[in-house]
Length: 318
DNA sequence: TTTATTGT
Image (cartoon, rainbow, N blue to C red):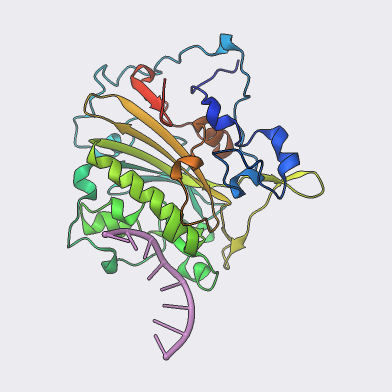
């Protein structure tokens, strides 16, 4: 029996990804009056819950596990992985743990399924000794050569080597930042207008959340979204680069849970197309219902987050 | 500030 895992934010559904729109809007904006419409995202089908749901199904979802205390205290142990993964693993495919982030790797596409980070004011604080100028991109030798991305795959491709777990999120040590340069944590990203601009803006926004939230949990990953082609059929199509056929995702997602001083949570989830976007974008126009990411990526996000302490989703009180 | 690649 299906159940509604997340409160559906009606406004997010008004334009984004509603299947019936897609045939009509191919090649155009869906309509000029839509405040949350930014063109490219809408050419793709992002699966969402139906806009009209049976209210009988909208029962509050009870916490799946009880080991997270009612106060929601972060784990007291010094196990960094348990801190980062406090609210559960989105999936369990080829998981690796690093100094300050956790990754699930997609061997077929030569890039991650997801990466998970736990940002704190301390970990993102400026540290003159921890600087990306000391870092180099390098192969992840923990994976078989058949499944590895290499620097030469990216060279001349036209794409940036874009971080999923951002380098600047990991200033606690040079090792922590250095490990974000593993090519398993890298995806081909459009440079100008995306990695260096719109996506960077989103990463900066997430870092700034640590100014008034002691704990910020971030899950980031690629999407390969289906798109209706001119023959009327729907296909997943994406470029691959280099001798190792590293996949170029059509989109990237970021799901954020921030905890305030009271121990209440706010969840925000974003999808951005891997394309040059205008300089003046409003990040919040790229918010989507988290279940649309879960459906598209084959993941389940923050399953162990106590639902009774989740107070906001995408800025809307619940 | 942070994100990077290419060419010299």
